[in-house]
Image 1 (cartoon, rainbow, N blue to C red):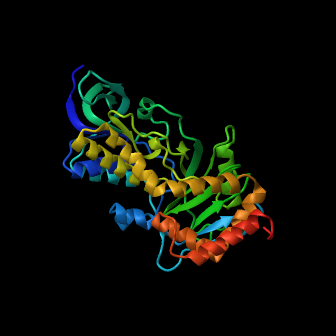
Image 2: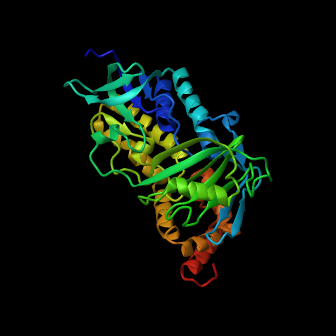
Image 3: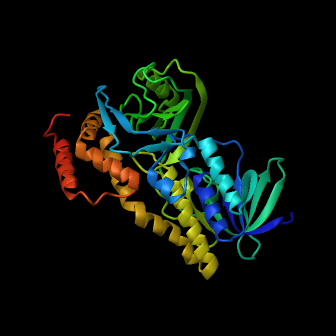
Length: 395
């Protein structure tokens, strides 16, 4: 079959990572095709920090809710409130409209768009790759790309071109429900996230209730095969007084919790977002890291197009891990230890009630980096953490 068009880059996947990469490349005057499936909405709590809104010019009008704190619930039912100080907030977005806005922004910057399903890659000895996809009419099409950015999710088909082990996956499931009015359905509050650390909700992760304005996301995650996610979500809705709320839709998907060791094939492919495995351990937060991953993938592509050196493709992973690798390592250890039993979850929730822990947690979340400006608070948190680890204080 003939090749319809040629591009500097074809981006496979139009979520936050792919749309950001396409936008950044188009703004630099590069010829870009953004290939995306139609109608897919990823299961996601939808939380974005102020740092994301600043770094990626996200207007406040896209938010469907602004969260001012969290309620943490232990296996025993004990609750800890974690308010956000001052005028800080966590923005909440609905992934359908949010992702669509990001794709449209990429198009406005000059990226071409195509709706279709990625089939694979062919090579004919010329520079770059031939990307094959099926459009909405099931017609197979071919386009030539000097570079391919794989941003097609946790089960990335583009990533199959790169050797190495697949990332560890947590399987997430949530139900979008009609949100009740404040005070009419148990503890639900439209400006607060509820997080349940309870083995009956998840044996190795957590359950959540995130407000989305007129709706709310209620869901759970687990890496344990055979764990009943739907049953656990029903249990969570019953625990929280939301069993009677109308269910708008149900969604499930795998979420990667470990960055791949390689993000490029040393030739013409680089990965971004879930395809690269960049979802934060312990929290499952992915939108900010996906968009940052899309940006550094675009930077690596630009470097390669300028220099012709395939080694420049490795800049994407190297830049990302230099910026966020330490945070991911800390969160990975935290999840492995504190989420391993209800006894440890009980102590973890106790620590969440500490004022120093709350200040450092929110500061790190808002700014997406480890906080270094409060050394005495760090020292106090370390001492308290050790006391809990050694069982020197009650849970």
